[in-house]
Length: 107
Image 1 (cartoon, rainbow, N blue to C red):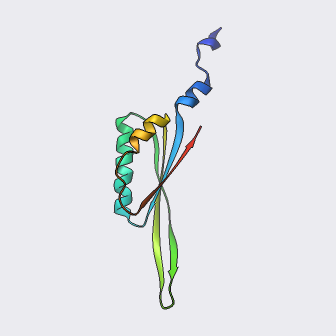
Image 2 (image 1 turned 90 degrees about the vertical axis):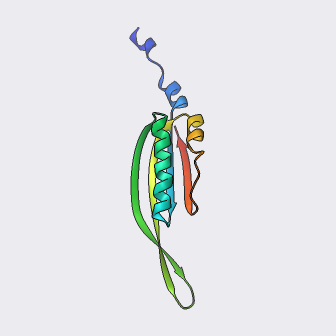
């Protein structure tokens, strides 16, 4: 039977999970540096990379008694398809101050 030679999708899904990285920062230079390091590490490991997706800039309002201040928050999103062990190796980069990284692993 021809179907017996095909590996089941569950086996592939256990080895290759989608990891979504959401980076956000008020400083664009620090954000781009962390993002470039993350992409470079993924491409060195020959992983499938989807992104970068630049999310719309949002404004955050900080109010004091005398002044109103607005801050820009920049976001980038990237998807990597690999095993959790490889993602752990890639994320051992130094993260610039002020950059927040959120990692979500899906199957």
